[in-house]
Length: 313
Image (tube, rainbow, N blue to C red):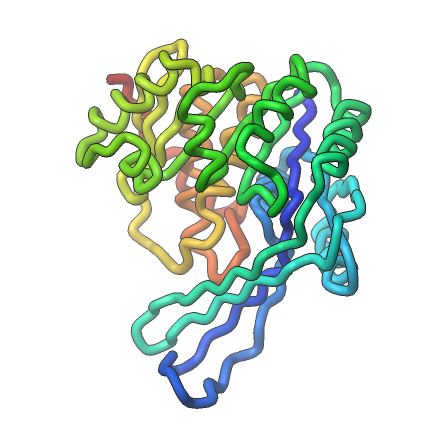
Protein backbone atom coordinates (compact mmCIF):
# COMPACT_ATOMS: atom_id res chain seq x y z
CA UNK A 1 0.00 0.00 0.00
CA UNK A 2 1.36 3.41 -0.97
CA UNK A 3 1.76 5.96 1.80
CA UNK A 4 -1.23 8.20 2.54
CA UNK A 5 -0.84 11.51 4.37
CA UNK A 6 -3.88 13.62 5.14
CA UNK A 7 -3.40 17.31 5.88
CA UNK A 8 -5.64 19.19 8.32
CA UNK A 9 -4.66 22.80 8.90
CA UNK A 10 -8.04 23.85 10.28
CA UNK A 11 -9.16 20.93 12.49
CA UNK A 12 -12.07 21.08 14.91
CA UNK A 13 -13.24 19.38 18.06
CA UNK A 14 -16.70 18.24 16.93
CA UNK A 15 -19.44 18.19 19.56
CA UNK A 16 -22.79 16.60 18.67
CA UNK A 17 -25.99 16.43 20.70
CA UNK A 18 -29.78 16.56 20.32
CA UNK A 19 -32.73 18.42 21.84
CA UNK A 20 -36.42 17.56 21.83
CA UNK A 21 -37.18 20.71 19.81
CA UNK A 22 -34.79 23.32 18.46
CA UNK A 23 -36.60 26.64 18.87
CA UNK A 24 -35.33 30.20 19.43
CA UNK A 25 -35.49 32.16 22.66
CA UNK A 26 -35.57 29.30 25.18
CA UNK A 27 -33.04 27.10 26.93
CA UNK A 28 -32.61 23.87 25.00
CA UNK A 29 -32.01 20.86 27.22
CA UNK A 30 -29.65 18.63 25.29
CA UNK A 31 -28.72 14.98 25.52
CA UNK A 32 -25.28 13.77 26.56
CA UNK A 33 -22.91 15.02 23.85
CA UNK A 34 -20.51 12.98 21.81
CA UNK A 35 -17.05 14.43 21.14
CA UNK A 36 -15.13 13.54 18.00
CA UNK A 37 -11.99 14.86 16.31
CA UNK A 38 -12.99 16.70 13.16
CA UNK A 39 -11.73 18.50 10.10
CA UNK A 40 -11.62 17.13 6.56
CA UNK A 41 -8.20 15.50 6.65
CA UNK A 42 -8.75 14.14 10.15
CA UNK A 43 -11.99 12.52 9.04
CA UNK A 44 -10.38 11.04 5.94
CA UNK A 45 -7.61 9.48 8.07
CA UNK A 46 -10.20 8.19 10.54
CA UNK A 47 -12.25 6.65 7.74
CA UNK A 48 -9.20 4.90 6.27
CA UNK A 49 -8.19 3.60 9.69
CA UNK A 50 -11.70 2.38 10.49
CA UNK A 51 -11.81 0.52 7.17
CA UNK A 52 -8.57 -1.28 7.99
CA UNK A 53 -6.17 0.84 5.95
CA UNK A 54 -3.21 2.96 6.99
CA UNK A 55 -2.95 6.75 6.89
CA UNK A 56 -0.85 9.32 8.67
CA UNK A 57 -2.64 12.49 9.71
CA UNK A 58 -0.74 15.78 9.74
CA UNK A 59 -2.77 17.98 12.09
CA UNK A 60 -2.13 21.57 13.18
CA UNK A 61 -3.05 21.91 16.86
CA UNK A 62 -3.01 24.73 19.38
CA UNK A 63 -4.17 25.56 22.88
CA UNK A 64 -6.36 23.53 25.29
CA UNK A 65 -8.85 22.60 22.55
CA UNK A 66 -5.99 21.34 20.42
CA UNK A 67 -4.73 19.24 23.33
CA UNK A 68 -8.21 17.76 23.80
CA UNK A 69 -8.46 17.02 20.07
CA UNK A 70 -5.04 15.35 20.08
CA UNK A 71 -6.16 13.05 22.91
CA UNK A 72 -9.20 12.08 20.84
CA UNK A 73 -6.99 11.33 17.84
CA UNK A 74 -4.72 9.04 19.82
CA UNK A 75 -7.73 7.36 21.45
CA UNK A 76 -8.77 6.33 17.94
CA UNK A 77 -5.31 4.91 17.24
CA UNK A 78 -4.50 7.40 14.50
CA UNK A 79 -0.92 7.90 13.37
CA UNK A 80 -0.64 11.63 14.11
CA UNK A 81 2.02 13.98 12.80
CA UNK A 82 1.45 16.98 15.06
CA UNK A 83 2.53 20.46 14.03
CA UNK A 84 1.96 23.63 15.98
CA UNK A 85 -0.96 25.68 14.72
CA UNK A 86 -0.91 29.48 14.72
CA UNK A 87 -3.58 29.73 17.43
CA UNK A 88 -6.30 27.98 19.41
CA UNK A 89 -7.91 25.00 17.66
CA UNK A 90 -11.55 25.65 16.81
CA UNK A 91 -14.71 23.79 17.79
CA UNK A 92 -17.83 22.86 15.84
CA UNK A 93 -21.24 22.02 17.24
CA UNK A 94 -24.11 19.98 15.81
CA UNK A 95 -27.61 19.81 17.31
CA UNK A 96 -30.32 17.47 16.04
CA UNK A 97 -34.00 18.27 16.55
CA UNK A 98 -35.25 14.95 17.93
CA UNK A 99 -38.83 15.68 16.85
CA UNK A 100 -38.30 16.14 13.12
CA UNK A 101 -34.71 14.99 12.60
CA UNK A 102 -33.44 18.35 11.34
CA UNK A 103 -29.78 18.94 12.07
CA UNK A 104 -28.17 22.31 12.82
CA UNK A 105 -24.42 22.63 12.39
CA UNK A 106 -22.39 25.51 13.80
CA UNK A 107 -18.77 25.82 12.62
CA UNK A 108 -16.40 28.32 14.23
CA UNK A 109 -13.47 29.90 12.34
CA UNK A 110 -9.93 28.75 12.93
CA UNK A 111 -6.73 30.76 13.44
CA UNK A 112 -5.06 32.55 10.51
CA UNK A 113 -1.86 31.26 8.90
CA UNK A 114 0.96 33.36 7.49
CA UNK A 115 2.70 32.59 4.21
CA UNK A 116 5.87 31.56 6.04
CA UNK A 117 3.92 29.20 8.29
CA UNK A 118 2.27 27.57 5.28
CA UNK A 119 5.64 27.19 3.56
CA UNK A 120 7.12 25.59 6.68
CA UNK A 121 4.20 23.15 6.78
CA UNK A 122 4.86 22.16 3.13
CA UNK A 123 8.53 21.64 4.01
CA UNK A 124 7.43 19.28 6.78
CA UNK A 125 5.33 17.25 4.33
CA UNK A 126 8.28 17.09 1.94
CA UNK A 127 10.49 15.56 4.61
CA UNK A 128 7.85 13.13 5.88
CA UNK A 129 6.39 11.78 2.60
CA UNK A 130 7.50 9.18 0.08
CA UNK A 131 7.87 10.52 -3.48
CA UNK A 132 4.84 8.46 -4.63
CA UNK A 133 2.63 9.17 -1.62
CA UNK A 134 -0.97 10.29 -1.79
CA UNK A 135 -1.42 13.65 -0.03
CA UNK A 136 -5.02 14.52 0.82
CA UNK A 137 -5.99 18.18 1.16
CA UNK A 138 -9.54 17.90 2.44
CA UNK A 139 -11.84 20.41 4.08
CA UNK A 140 -11.77 24.17 4.31
CA UNK A 141 -8.47 25.93 3.84
CA UNK A 142 -7.51 27.98 6.89
CA UNK A 143 -7.74 31.76 7.14
CA UNK A 144 -4.60 33.26 5.63
CA UNK A 145 -4.31 30.68 2.84
CA UNK A 146 -5.13 32.70 -0.27
CA UNK A 147 -6.33 31.19 -3.57
CA UNK A 148 -3.28 29.76 -5.24
CA UNK A 149 -2.11 27.94 -2.12
CA UNK A 150 -3.08 24.57 -3.65
CA UNK A 151 -0.94 25.34 -6.69
CA UNK A 152 1.99 26.22 -4.43
CA UNK A 153 1.43 22.94 -2.59
CA UNK A 154 1.43 20.95 -5.85
CA UNK A 155 4.68 22.62 -6.91
CA UNK A 156 6.35 21.92 -3.55
CA UNK A 157 5.11 18.32 -3.31
CA UNK A 158 6.40 17.38 -6.77
CA UNK A 159 5.62 13.76 -7.64
CA UNK A 160 3.24 13.20 -4.73
CA UNK A 161 -0.33 12.65 -5.87
CA UNK A 162 -2.50 15.40 -4.37
CA UNK A 163 -6.17 14.65 -3.76
CA UNK A 164 -8.14 17.89 -3.28
CA UNK A 165 -11.59 18.12 -1.73
CA UNK A 166 -12.24 21.73 -0.75
CA UNK A 167 -14.75 24.51 -1.30
CA UNK A 168 -15.25 28.22 -1.75
CA UNK A 169 -12.65 30.42 -3.41
CA UNK A 170 -10.01 27.68 -3.43
CA UNK A 171 -12.30 25.39 -5.43
CA UNK A 172 -13.24 28.25 -7.75
CA UNK A 173 -9.56 28.99 -8.35
CA UNK A 174 -8.76 25.35 -9.06
CA UNK A 175 -11.58 25.18 -11.60
CA UNK A 176 -9.61 27.72 -13.69
CA UNK A 177 -6.96 24.98 -14.08
CA UNK A 178 -3.81 26.57 -12.63
CA UNK A 179 -0.74 24.39 -13.16
CA UNK A 180 0.52 22.09 -11.81
CA UNK A 181 -2.87 20.61 -10.94
CA UNK A 182 -3.76 18.02 -8.30
CA UNK A 183 -4.17 14.37 -9.22
CA UNK A 184 -7.82 14.32 -8.09
CA UNK A 185 -10.35 17.12 -7.67
CA UNK A 186 -13.63 16.32 -5.91
CA UNK A 187 -16.69 18.50 -5.34
CA UNK A 188 -20.37 18.10 -4.55
CA UNK A 189 -23.25 18.71 -6.92
CA UNK A 190 -24.15 22.14 -5.52
CA UNK A 191 -20.56 23.30 -6.00
CA UNK A 192 -20.46 21.91 -9.54
CA UNK A 193 -23.72 23.68 -10.41
CA UNK A 194 -22.38 26.98 -9.07
CA UNK A 195 -19.10 26.62 -10.98
CA UNK A 196 -20.74 25.59 -14.25
CA UNK A 197 -23.77 27.87 -14.14
CA UNK A 198 -25.79 24.85 -15.26
CA UNK A 199 -28.50 22.75 -13.63
CA UNK A 200 -26.61 19.45 -14.01
CA UNK A 201 -29.86 17.60 -13.43
CA UNK A 202 -28.70 14.27 -14.85
CA UNK A 203 -25.74 12.02 -14.26
CA UNK A 204 -24.65 12.50 -17.85
CA UNK A 205 -24.64 16.29 -17.46
CA UNK A 206 -22.55 16.07 -14.29
CA UNK A 207 -20.14 13.67 -15.98
CA UNK A 208 -19.83 15.94 -19.00
CA UNK A 209 -18.96 18.89 -16.77
CA UNK A 210 -16.41 16.78 -14.88
CA UNK A 211 -14.84 15.88 -18.23
CA UNK A 212 -14.84 19.56 -19.21
CA UNK A 213 -12.87 20.41 -16.07
CA UNK A 214 -10.49 17.51 -16.67
CA UNK A 215 -9.80 18.54 -20.26
CA UNK A 216 -9.15 22.09 -19.09
CA UNK A 217 -6.49 20.71 -16.76
CA UNK A 218 -8.17 21.24 -13.37
CA UNK A 219 -7.03 17.73 -12.37
CA UNK A 220 -6.19 14.37 -13.90
CA UNK A 221 -9.37 12.93 -12.33
CA UNK A 222 -12.49 14.96 -11.51
CA UNK A 223 -15.27 13.61 -9.28
CA UNK A 224 -18.69 15.17 -8.68
CA UNK A 225 -20.81 13.81 -5.84
CA UNK A 226 -24.56 13.73 -6.53
CA UNK A 227 -25.86 12.90 -3.06
CA UNK A 228 -28.26 9.96 -3.05
CA UNK A 229 -27.60 9.52 -6.76
CA UNK A 230 -23.99 8.51 -6.11
CA UNK A 231 -20.98 10.09 -7.83
CA UNK A 232 -19.65 10.57 -11.34
CA UNK A 233 -16.01 10.59 -12.36
CA UNK A 234 -14.06 11.76 -15.40
CA UNK A 235 -10.57 10.38 -15.85
CA UNK A 236 -8.16 8.83 -18.33
CA UNK A 237 -10.24 5.63 -18.19
CA UNK A 238 -13.43 7.41 -19.31
CA UNK A 239 -16.61 8.58 -17.62
CA UNK A 240 -18.11 6.57 -14.77
CA UNK A 241 -21.04 6.54 -12.35
CA UNK A 242 -21.34 4.73 -9.03
CA UNK A 243 -24.17 4.43 -6.53
CA UNK A 244 -24.76 2.41 -3.38
CA UNK A 245 -28.06 0.83 -2.37
CA UNK A 246 -28.73 2.47 0.97
CA UNK A 247 -32.02 4.02 2.09
CA UNK A 248 -31.00 4.41 5.75
CA UNK A 249 -29.90 7.97 6.52
CA UNK A 250 -29.09 8.74 10.16
CA UNK A 251 -26.53 11.53 9.77
CA UNK A 252 -24.94 13.07 6.69
CA UNK A 253 -21.92 14.28 8.65
CA UNK A 254 -18.71 12.84 7.27
CA UNK A 255 -20.15 11.17 4.17
CA UNK A 256 -17.90 13.14 1.82
CA UNK A 257 -14.82 12.55 3.97
CA UNK A 258 -15.65 8.84 4.15
CA UNK A 259 -15.88 8.79 0.36
CA UNK A 260 -12.45 10.39 0.05
CA UNK A 261 -11.10 7.93 2.63
CA UNK A 262 -12.44 4.86 0.84
CA UNK A 263 -11.39 6.20 -2.55
CA UNK A 264 -7.85 7.14 -1.48
CA UNK A 265 -7.30 3.90 0.44
CA UNK A 266 -8.32 1.93 -2.65
CA UNK A 267 -5.92 3.87 -4.88
CA UNK A 268 -3.13 3.34 -2.36
CA UNK A 269 -3.88 -0.40 -2.38
CA UNK A 270 -3.40 -0.45 -6.15
CA UNK A 271 -7.00 -0.51 -7.35
CA UNK A 272 -7.76 1.33 -10.60
CA UNK A 273 -9.62 4.61 -10.29
CA UNK A 274 -13.09 3.26 -11.32
CA UNK A 275 -12.95 0.56 -8.64
CA UNK A 276 -11.71 3.13 -6.14
CA UNK A 277 -14.75 5.24 -7.05
CA UNK A 278 -17.04 2.31 -6.25
CA UNK A 279 -15.36 1.66 -2.92
CA UNK A 280 -15.48 5.33 -2.03
CA UNK A 281 -19.22 5.35 -2.69
CA UNK A 282 -19.71 2.34 -0.41
CA UNK A 283 -17.78 4.13 2.35
CA UNK A 284 -19.95 7.24 1.92
CA UNK A 285 -23.13 5.17 2.02
CA UNK A 286 -21.91 3.46 5.18
CA UNK A 287 -21.19 6.81 6.83
CA UNK A 288 -24.77 8.06 6.62
CA UNK A 289 -25.92 4.99 8.58
CA UNK A 290 -23.98 6.12 11.66
CA UNK A 291 -25.08 8.82 14.14
CA UNK A 292 -23.09 11.97 14.81
CA UNK A 293 -19.58 11.95 13.41
CA UNK A 294 -18.78 8.23 13.61
CA UNK A 295 -18.10 8.06 9.85
CA UNK A 296 -18.07 4.73 7.98
CA UNK A 297 -18.11 1.67 10.20
CA UNK A 298 -16.43 -1.44 8.76
CA UNK A 299 -19.43 -3.71 9.22
CA UNK A 300 -21.68 -1.31 7.29
CA UNK A 301 -19.05 -0.91 4.58
CA UNK A 302 -18.76 -4.68 4.14
CA UNK A 303 -22.55 -4.93 3.89
CA UNK A 304 -22.87 -2.17 1.28
CA UNK A 305 -19.83 -2.83 -0.91
CA UNK A 306 -21.38 -5.79 -2.80
CA UNK A 307 -24.48 -3.68 -3.48
CA UNK A 308 -22.50 -0.75 -4.87
CA UNK A 309 -22.72 -0.50 -8.65
CA UNK A 310 -20.24 0.86 -11.18
CA UNK A 311 -21.31 1.87 -14.70
CA UNK A 312 -19.32 3.36 -17.54
CA UNK A 313 -21.01 6.00 -19.70
